[in-house]
Length: 128
Image 1 (spheres, helix red, strand yellow):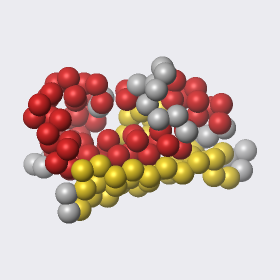
Image 2: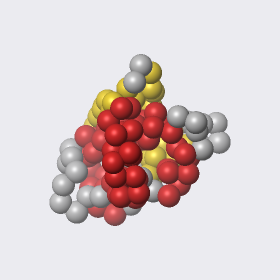
Image 3: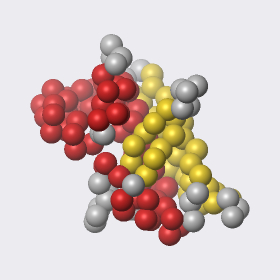
Image 4: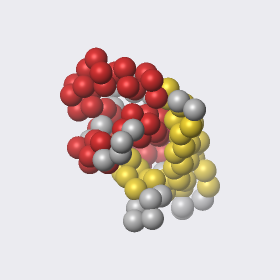
């Protein structure tokens, strides 16, 4: 039982806003699930929330030790919130396969944003 990996990432809100402005639907549909898009777009400043979720996905990839390559897709990770607002991640596809291979059974995720940046930290834990 213990920490399998830790990843952090920082995303500039202006960069995410630029990607949305230049490639709206393509960018959103490539990087975010429908539920993630609905969550972020429910806020007046959606770009801050998109940046947080983007950073969270990058942090998860760092825990997995893969980056975005091979069969991995942005859609293999969905950043979710529980009823209290605590962020978490649901994995599918290649990300779920790699996490299982590494023995990751539990995730700890934190997202914050301020001053034009969003930061996320992810920890993958083995409970056996």
